[in-house]
Image (cartoon, rainbow, N blue to C red):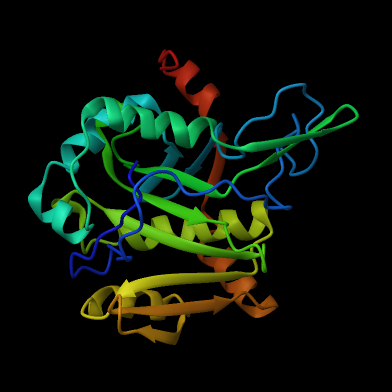
Length: 269
């Protein structure tokens, strides 16, 4: 996954500036610990650490968020052959093998730290593929994909700050609330599971629809960058905002990805 999100002039698609090619640096995030076997956030008693959302599925009314796996790469690669997406994401097309390498990098690049029997996992990025909840489970995941949502935890001065990005790549799903729900589910996950207390979103200045969507989610404009022609919006999660966010996502179900795939008779890829 290339990580250069686009501005399509749509409320379900957030833009960001082009960044240098390659994976983001792996920086420690003290709250991004491996889950215990009981599913609670904390120290893992297992000898192996895993990326915190590697076995997590977030299910809403319109969207289901699943971890980014090799099964999703081909569809993502097809998306990125679009000249429009290449232009809007300020990126060059990668070969299919390079896309697979990017996925492996996302899945495997994390710093671990052992202390006694406990294994800590630090990861700077939380990524979910956005699926149409009406299609999956049931249809193949790659045929249910509509976009992706990311949360970057790379601010070393404030590890409780997450930069959120949303992309709805399938044109027929834009403007229908899929991006809004995916964003809310990711925010709720960040607050409840990762200790996030502040969110930021960077959006192209001309993307008034996306700016409007985030403002409806209680984000406030805090900065304008004339060089990158983008607006930074921010949400501080006060007790009141936390209650509002959890009310908006009280329908969200958190499930095991492995168990759902096993029940559907799908082997890991």
